[in-house]
Image (tube, rainbow, N blue to C red; front, side, top):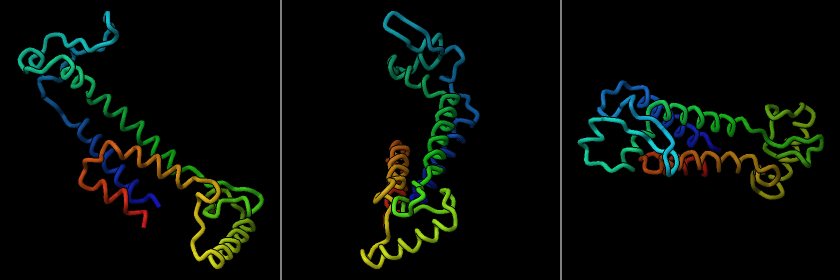
Length: 172
């Protein structure tokens, strides 16, 4: 259900990581820039820097640049990969009673063979009676939670040309 969106996110995270790991000789990449406390709260102390002195950028723009250093980007990539992995490894609800077990549950979710067989029979009955494939949101909601998490993680990339395709690919 979320394969295309997960692949899209993994590719964007890989791109962010590659960019952050690329060598830089940019004049704004300065070890003099530090987060420090001021009278009005924390700010970036730009020190003396060629970009700061001659760029024409205002203090807010320079602070934004300083906050986007490669080390921070790599931490964000690691955090987002952790959220993505946690979402994708979330499990469907399993109960000793197949009527309370999510119809999308599998052995990977912890179903034993007997309960799995009973659930498959129950799902076939549901298909025959309702004419549709039983869905997760009818019971445990795992698929909806995973989908929403991936949509939120993908949102910063909404300007990417493959965003809409990834968002809609698995919904057919």
